[in-house]
Length: 389
Image 1: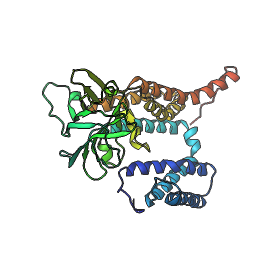
Image 2: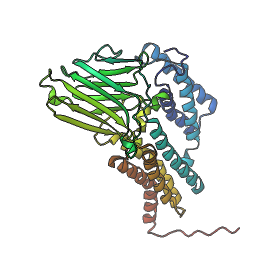
Image 3: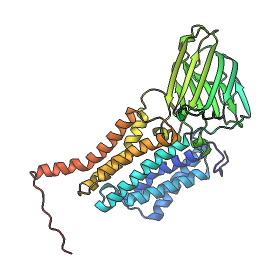
């Protein structure tokens, strides 16, 4: 990649956001330490240039670029601003806490609405080339044999009276003989748009099927979350000569894989598509979602709502009415508006638990010290004299 590249790589925006986040802690530390702006800027610039220089010879798999330096410096600047005002965020005045809580509610709702829009497939109407089984750049060849394949890149027309969630947005059909088990992704059917860019890729990974489908996130140089269907091929590995029909379809709400044998035996599995999968778009590496409980999304929901819980508790401590009602309404709206407007799957119980834990833990960081102070004072409340205007 050229050192002056800005948008020439596939995940440019993901890389920029990660480089921004990388230097926020350094900038925050310098801000908390009250380091002056010029020395702090020189230190951050020297650090990011050193990191980029190491990527030339020492660190493999990374390309240095001016974009990374600019993103690192921007992240450090944001961190310095936050660090210099850390007391306003950690121990906010009631009026400031009210504004912070309002901002956190808006960010939560906007994040889920944006994720719902970004998760929609974005596929070429006519793929430039379809490769079945072999010679896909960057991947090992498929160990079995593909007898036939078909790719559907154009959504099916909406039929009157049918549920919009059942509309097929994209699909892949393949007739295969599995061959020996290979513990890495080997593409079976791939649509190629240009060199190294695969808007649709269906492959095998050991016993699993994996589907890569380009979404609007990839159009903005973010990652498209990958979908994994576990142990779909295992029952037929005993007979490697058996021909199987593999069909994977992506609707608004989920992706469903079917593997059928000539005798009619069928294995089917569905993976829901949810707005809580937003974090995979900015993750450094490709992440595959499956049908198991989504604990990673639950963790990110908890981390995102922890500040909202703290700031809402800071507001409610001052007897500000409706603070918790607004917080709960905003959380529920964020989780529900994406599925309702874009026909995605509703959040599962892990995400709901993660939301509750984040709010509760954030509130506990404010309410527990206050409770401890009241207990030590014997439950006596200090009376305050109202100001005379």
